[in-house]
Amino acid sequence: MYMSGVSTSPEGEVLRDLEGARVLMTGLSASGGVDIARTFADLKGRLVLHTTDLSPELTEVVVVLSQSAAEMKLFTDDIGSADGAVGLARKAAQAFGGLDAVINLVTISAADMAGINTDQQVEDLVSVKLSPIAHLTRVTANRMRVVMSEGLILNVLMMPNVHTGREAAIATLARATLQIMTNAEAHAWADQGIRINAIGPRITSNGLTPSGAYVTNEPDLAALALYLASKRGKSLSGHVFDAEGVANF
Image 1 (cartoon, rainbow, N blue to C red):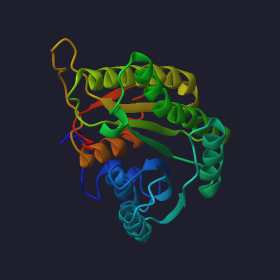
Image 2: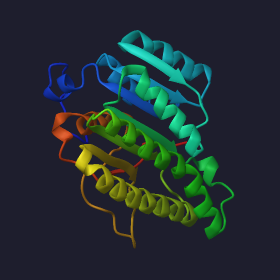
Image 3: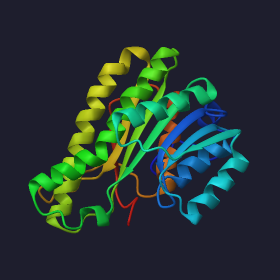
């Protein structure tokens, strides 16, 4: 498991920290983020969930989550623009009087990468995917600041394992852009006690495989999110953690 220090017992210190936490989670789908949402719901969290996936599978997931969470609200707003992100952040913060954690999920799928052939197309794809979470990071951090609430914002970029040079180029640019954004926002909000971290694709450079632990599945992803949102993760900000094989679609 990626975070060996995270107890899976309900009596664990990390889990006790997060009982009843107010959590906004965006980008939830049947293929991504379910384990994270379920973990916070099982801790009787008060959840604001955002999705554009209205499939029967996700509908069933939402029903199950609503039975575990202390409270839950679901939104399907378009958050692709700055105005959309501001609107969702306002409604999420008002729902429970503030936010303790924000988890933004974004996926670059194999279908998204199909037909990408030029450097400009690579840049455009990365911009389209990451711009919404950049808006959400700033506006939710500002909402936390307004109500003087410390907390975590975790941006998660999920991608399948790369198989071609073009896919590798997309993953490399997306990871680099995510790193720059994370560093800048972590610095901007550090004095407010707001922590900004991210999880992105593990990049192999010049044939060299990076060393160190990395996320390999959704339960690991959920464990890491819990750790970062808890008091134990309070000293961590500005980090981009590695993921590999979390999304294979």
